Length: 233
Image (cartoon, rainbow, N blue to C red; front, side, top):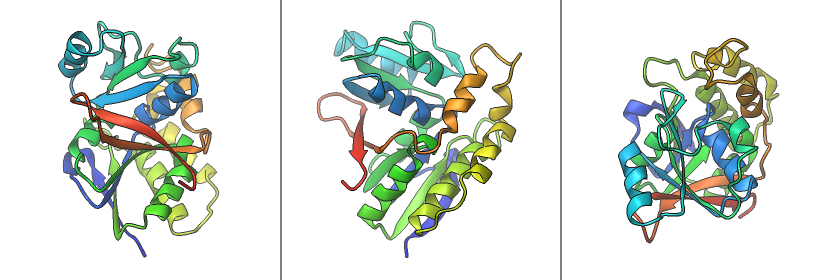
């Protein structure tokens, strides 16, 4: 049986297999970018890296990202699934930088397998792990950073881990924890402008997408390449 451990962002490190979890909102956003027709999705850890990568090598790329939830200055997109659903990204390269999710990807680079997980890809992520059959999986709870409890990410990790074991629990008990988490309490009417309630609704659409997200080193630029991994692949 595959061994499982849950780590905070601060403790993230390479392992045989890693699932970096960011429900609110990086790894809810990334599947939507692909669904909206983005041709390529690159992840980086630093704002300056994203800006420099576009300036030097990818002048036609769109920048997406946030700091403290708010869209970064000079970026075309923030980190909102609601915003992405009305954005024109078809055929475009997206460079994505966030304060939690892409940090976890950077810290676990070099692992045998790195997946980016959330509720929207939960079943596909579990299936990808089952196919890989690692001896151990580290789940990186990126929301457990910056003084937050990260319970929204822990809930998604626990659901994926249960499915990895062949269980099929009711997802409602897991998704209910998103709204009550430290991060989730921002996504209410009258909350911050960067946190529309619709983002939370999109974040708890369990199994909305049939592809897992795999992170690998890009072959041509200094970035992490996000790829879609179909169930059963």
